[in-house]
Length: 213
Image (cartoon, rainbow, N blue to C red; front, side, top):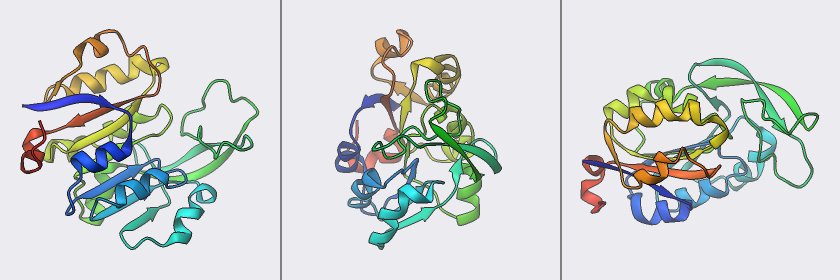
């Protein structure tokens, strides 16, 4: 049986779940801080970030096992409006394909190329062992666009959950629970009262060799 539980830190995931042979998709890489943590343990990390301005520092470091993908990840490949957080001294942390409430007049629109996890996996011939998703409320759409990949490989998934979009998150979580056992059902039953908690989905089948339980 696969397991579903919650976590808070990418370095914990890197230590516990990433093997030296693993491929990781870091979706919503932003400045690349988490990317570097993941890359310290993985064979290769694909860092998805449509905002070149924030990912420039990571690009300048030219890490040999990191590929920067200048695309947003969605449930459909094409183009879309990306709302760039332009507030000072926050590192564009609230940038999203969603128009987030409370940021009126504090974002700029950027037309970006979009892909899906399934499309990118087919295009590159890669299969991720771990997927981290932090896209400011757009996580359900990303997971919808990853359906084929998830069905093919019950890998580790880390994603952010927003209580403001719980009605959108819930069907996706219910779908995941068909293959992943939740180790914190009380948290799910409460309707995700804590915004921006990280949910961690892991598969014993896929990670049996790592001793994960």
